[in-house]
Image (cartoon, rainbow, N blue to C red; front, side, top):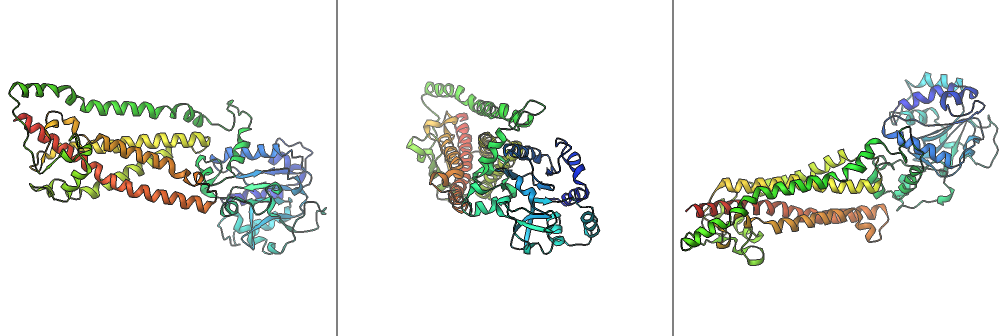
Length: 488
């Protein structure tokens, strides 16, 4: 939390209780002597503040005392907590043994305290560089304060400060570390505080690790329409994502598939003409067999370049100087290019999918856009490898088989590419959910399961990133050899 929070709270401490409601919550009646206050210090916290307000309304709050209660925007009120207004003086919940968390605080306005705070704010140390560190330094003896009991009546001047029970500020971090279990009955909680920075409940993918996120999403679903008529905290950006971003990848993928096919279509259309001319001439012009050909391709039909052929070529085991078939550092470069495509697709997907969309939409959009971008990027790279092979030209160790001499399009390793893509898609779809499919619910177990399948995906993907481009490159060189034989 930024240090501006302290600067926001300090003037509030100086307000009299009669003027407090009008200054902080305009919707509070003028006679009220208490208020719930939060801080919105960024666009992403607007939705969080609205959900917090809805959870307060759901709790049936009526307010009972004369202090201010500050709540971080990333907290969720689970039941009526008006009893916190009975806490005299300054009240907060301890964290990390001797320090308290400022996400939930009960404050009594005081001009004297405000003046003292302002006098010390410039010189008093802050271990966080913000409000929490400063206030912990100011209330240096807070760890020894008595524990607040909600059912015990207190006089306003009975204690300078008191410790709030954990039920008033239940840390979601402890819940996650504790295998997604609370150490106290969940029904006793007044507030759940979503303290995990990257896993805020409004971020669509955070529910993957935080099992309490559905509770926040359920309150969000009850939000009334805003001034634009949008319900459930939706924004115009989210509405655009839900309506159009779901369909756009399919249209782009269809267009890309058509363009990819069209780039090879002339071969398919002209394949029969050279064959007829060859038959009319008595079948002349048949290619000469070589030590390395496509006869070892998948399925034994000689219709495409198989990985075994690439292995023999890369190892230099074929005749005719096969060791110089590939450019220098070709394999290392293709592996780097493969992971570069994955990284680029991931980053772009994270940037374009709105973080506040519904989790179901978020996962759907991320998979659609991620796979589409990866297919476009890596597909373009494979096509570039094929063209590079054609530009490299005929090599004495490479000759297309007879069946492919007049049909260069049949040399393309389409089956291998399709099977590799299917494996990668299935693995990435499964990776986040393997733990749940195995009945694992703990934080550590989920991470271990994800890392385990992730390592397997990396191993297989590395092999694919090495051999697929090589297969397309060799197909390009075979195509060049086929063109030379047709010309002859």
